[in-house]
Image (cartoon, rainbow, N blue to C red):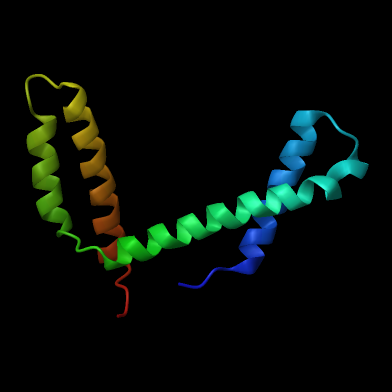
Length: 107
């Protein structure tokens, strides 16, 4: 699991600029906001990298199987709260399965 430092710094500067704008501070305060932004960016990128690694390691069902399961859930007469949650999970699983089929990851 490698973390792209350039990505961390780009995100940190974006966070610092957003904080500068939201606090309505002058541009001279940008560098003072960078430290907190860098901590936030590091945590975000670390979390995203861990999620990507977990997605790669998780077994993925074939897209066609996920589509069938998704269709059966979408064709129900009525949907409750937990059904909507399950539908979103199936849609996310379908996106991962389609991505994996489009770009196979070398082990």
